[in-house]
Amino acid sequence: MRIVFMGTPEFAIPSLKALIANHQVTGVFCQPDKPVGRHQNKLQPPPVKVCAQEHGIPVFQPEKLRNGTALAVLKELDPELIVVAAYGRILPDEILALPPKGCVNIHSSLLPKYRGAAPINWAILNGEQETGVTIMHMASQLDAGDIILQQSTPIDPAETAAVLYDRLAELGGKMILEAAAQIEAGASARIPQDHEKATLAPMLSKALSPIDWSQSAQSIYNKARGLVPWPMASTDVISGEPMKIYSAQVVEKHLHDAAPGCVVSTAFGGIDIACGDGNVLRILELQPPGKKKMTAAAYLRGHPLQV
Image (tube, rainbow, N blue to C red; front, side):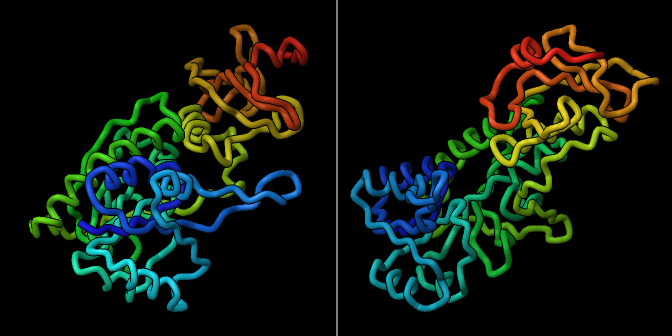
């Protein structure tokens, strides 16, 4: 089956590789290269572009999808099916209507929950115990199309968004082959979503980073896990400057006289900070401003704290 693939980050790579190995991928669309470095004077290609070029597949990086240029390219590529995985752009109706077998999306949540840009992060931020991948027929509305396949997976209590991201990427790569086979055979399911149960997973921002120590230890722990690798949870209660928190654990101490945000102990290889529910979050790995990531024990050796 002739397929055009649209995706940008690492999440899309397992799906692209699976389709290359089993179908005719005639072209790949991804976001434009991004400037990187201190002076923003170097361009870094998206992971999907690198993968496509390694396999000799033409790559297209339009700035816009609604000026007719992308549509003209797609007509030349003549796909039977368009597959989208974390592309980062909403497809206009004229593109959705182009391929005879339609457009499908690989989405990293159990739709209709967590429609939007950051479903993996928000599942962890909200303390979900499971998530999964949904393959769906695309519609004009964001992540609202009929479901073809859906598979759930438990979220480990210690799993970060970065680790879960990799697991769901691999799961999506396996599921898209099954969905493509159904579509090619004209037998793909169309299960309507219950739109009343839809929730949103908006884009992340640095405004989410600061920790509110009046929250429960578990909620703060979920934030520390859910914001890895960006924008990272941060706190200034240790040194007065914002520090990124890379790993932590909840310690049940039921403190009743410590104000939330107070450092209450450094005796167990970490930095124990009181939370709003009387429990403690033990910081295990952190990154001070302008420094590399380090263990809390290493930080304390150079910066002993008065408790």
